[in-house]
Amino acid sequence: MKPQAIAITGRHSNDAGALVRLVWLSALAVVFVLMQALAAQARPESLAPLAEKISPSVVNITTSTTVEGRTGPQGIVPDGSPFEDFFREFQDRNRDGEGPRARRSSALGSGFVISEDGYVVTNNHVIDGADEILVEFFSGEELAATVVGTDPNTDIALLKVESDEPLPFVSFGDSDSARVGDWVIAMGNPLGQGFSVSAGIVSARNRALSGTYDDYIQTDAAINRGNSGGPLFNMDGEVVGVNTAILSPNGGSIGIGFSMASNVVTRVVDQLKEFGETRRGWLGVRIQDVTDEIAEAMGLEQAAGALITDVPEGPAKEAGLLSGDVILTFDGVDVADTRALVRQVGNTAVGKSVRVVVFRDGGTQTVMVTLGRREEAEAAVPAAMQDDDTPDVKEKTVLGMTLSILTDEMREELGVPDNQNGLAVLSVDELSEAFEKGLRSGDIITEAGQQKVASLDELDDRIEEAKEAGRKSLLLLVRRGGDPRFVALSLAD
Image (cartoon, rainbow, N blue to C red; front, side, top):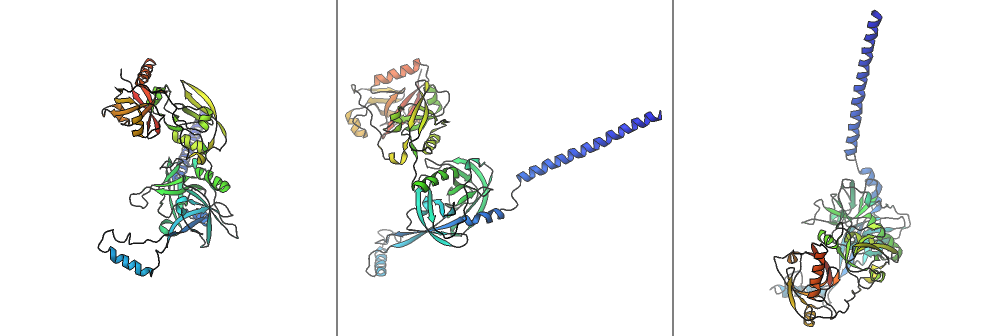
């Protein structure tokens, strides 16, 4: 019996030891996981090594501009003030009989060097109109700069300085890889105080302010006046943005700053370096977003793409694109909305032939378009509408609007071309859906159901056709001051 008892006792002892070891290993694993999580969430211990590494490539920019002198006391006292004559005599004495004296105006900004041979990136508004541009380096060295090229659309300028020695520079990073919550640092010359570093995170992505090609990174890193043109760095020391604007009620930083994304800047810089100007692709259409109502009225499965409202003379018209087409994909990329299409077209090479997939007549079609150059076409005048027969004059109230065909008197009063046909909006019921969606007296309806309308009978036909097709709304092409847009109005039962 004893050997058996000993054997049983030994088995229990081994099981207890294994259990203790298992508990300890589990505890150590938990501690290890917690330490990893804390390390991942912790802020960098210090940004000093990174700041020391990239500071030599960041520059202060000072510009000088000649401002013509004034002949009177403007800005000193208001016109008509009893002191106006006194100040005019005072200015005349100071001029010693000379004409108005020109004065020098200075401005401050920031920038950064992107190549050892002296190319410098900054904002266009920092150097716009400057007679002289002086670049100051972290070391205190100052060099005169010349303008290579500018792009007001993205507010980017490329400068060049000449140096006997290779200059320290930084490289661009991939702004698309920047995530909301990533750490970033801004460097520049805020409020003229000299080189300064501020840290924060990426607060938001893909912000648009007012420009066609806007793609801003929003950050809470402190950005103030004078930071314009300076770099926004990621933690690898790569430039992911160019500090451009702040949102502030008082002119100071409140934690909402905007940096133009580096993936936009690099394309602009490459073109400015090669051509001294930008060369963006041009499709040659007027477009608007597709709303849920427009999608339903057209039979689209989802509200996506860019709806063509007008096709003037240009690449799109030559390729056969039509007003009322919805661009679904461009050069193999799905089109989310008009902003996405404009940016993609602008980023495509001039002269490239691209496939454009459109929704037309209930199905999809592919059209090959050879892009033109936007800069050459911006002053082009859209083609006028073609002549149609003009029916007899009459009025009718429909869809909450009182409509009439265009007469010569109306064309003259509204300032539209003589060959413009359609239905003039005489008045709009303020309680109607038409009024809610922005239609007003003086608007001109040129299409209904994606077909031209030159008479009220034709509009009635389009309404009936839409109802017979089971549509809940009718798509109208409305022009105001020559600018077209589509509006979908619900059809009453």
